Length: 145
Image (tube, rainbow, N blue to C red; front, side, top):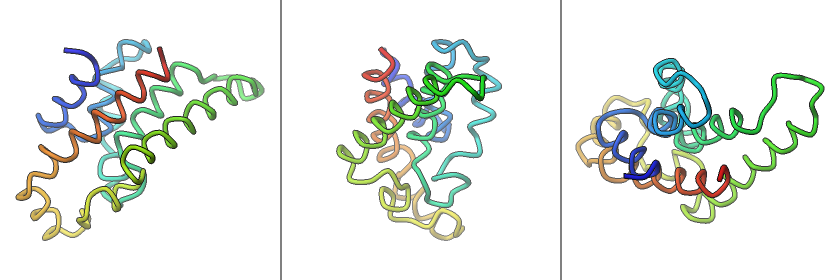
């Protein structure tokens, strides 16, 4: 199984979208998988279920940051590379999926307990979201390799 498939399977197993990407790619960028997955737990559902940027995209952006980013605040060339590659991710994901916003990808208000229940009953997190994770991971693959 390749990394995009692994990420998609993680989503089906119950990890959120950001965690799924992070879990599949942490070792490749030299970060502790457990800590990274834990850190990504707040990004699901468009950051805390607020419907903002899809967690799969956020997770992929974190991997891009680890691969191309910098810890030096004056390293503007590295920042530029990370920003450009993240913009490529956003553009390609939006072109493929019509949006990068969770609230536009998933027609449920996940902060509302009743809506969240409906989303779960509809299989959103086991059928629809794994496809967004797969999409983000495939795009990530093209960017980091």
